[in-house]
Image 1 (tube, rainbow, N blue to C red):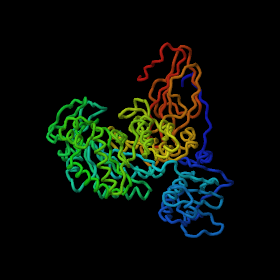
Image 2: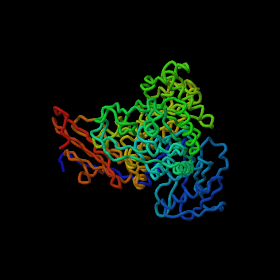
Image 3: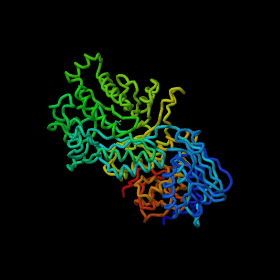
Image 4: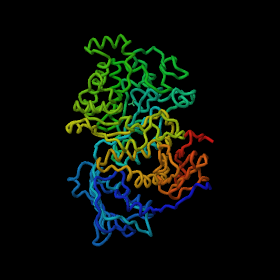
Length: 636
Ligand code: ACM
């Protein structure tokens, strides 16, 4: 061992004490209020489970399935309580007085009473499961508390792009399970794009016969260094989509389908070239990839970006899109249908004599107004079916469709402008960490991503209500969403790595009051417990780096490195000899004192290894005591 190193053993905190000490009782998202009462409820085999609620049967099943895993026994279910018998009671009495999706939990030494109806009772059960510490000597000890809880935002969403890469139904369900556990209530399913059409449309079978398959994908980061020639294909039948809708609804999650128009339409155009302004024109890849240029006929795109070949605003196109949307509406009962609207270059519309004549006929002064005409035509049809449209913030350009909800992704400006025009808004700005395809650390160990930097702390710091809005305008901010674009996410495992723990931070900003936000409590007390759960459930979450580690190089001669493990049951290993840490490096057991002689430097490297063996990236912190140059060859 290096002479300059000495180790102090830290105080180990046992898991049950850990949960007891957390003022949020381990619940993510943090409830509106938790007040302590005296005593504890001791849950054991004699506790009964009483359903007195209108939606209770499936909730008691859920709770009992959880009890079997958590405690190793199920509770006896009854309809009535026995005097002096310890009981968990699910009730809807008084639930009408609660806010939408709200619930209460009252824990006394005798009873745990969960009050709510529908989503509210379901969320009470999620919180009840999360607040139960591990069993000790056949008992689970739950502190007496009163919890009052309801969401800050009605819309709490995540978007998954299944066009750039296809994800199986089994993964979608596994993902929905976790969303529900964190009280996220909207799953936005990005079903169509340039690289694949993923939903069966019976009237237009070529959309999936042709549009659901591409012949290759770039290798590595855009513009790529070659092309995998393996086809990427897949689509969901309408029956499968209905099954997802039903599965999600049972967990109080609404599925919003997205059918992109008028841009990001290459897969549809490859299937039906008459949807293009120039049906006979070859596909043109206007990018820097080695295969940029023309490709014969209309092609499903094999690379990423924005493409000029967008839908022509003809009667035929509107008829086809309306027919497609009718089938979509029949599969998805959601109030909202997402119609895309983003990144539609106007090049082809400018070149097209048809589009120019149409603009003249309709009195449209530019191509942005033509896009607005396009969206408004679609909106009329969707509204006539009793539904509403959501579009990305480009739908503001050229005039907003009268009833549209705006999804603000290019920063907050679109959301602000829409709210100022009295339109509903969902905030999902990439610049604020809500693009969860971005990377989670600056380590070279990160897998290839689209770029950007969005650690979970950045999402956590975000407040979806822009300060510039007046009190009246703020009401139009209906919620917040995280988006997972999948250009660089080819597998379900990698999707999970991008999703967690960021989805947990999203849940807290979407649900909890701003005053309840507490990054330290979230990161250091609750997240480690939740990540340990995901670890056990074989969810491939991103393992955080050690808590307390400086993300900057440090100067000085004496350093005390005081760290916390970010996953309960995990271990931190470290080195200062430039080796890459693994189980063979020093095990961190408490604050470490490192002395660096004058004129020298050391590199502290760490890694976190979770109980499952999942690993964090390796971190590197230079500890410099006046060495002439802080650059150290850390690759040795
Ligand atoms: C988007 O990221 N193009 C909405």
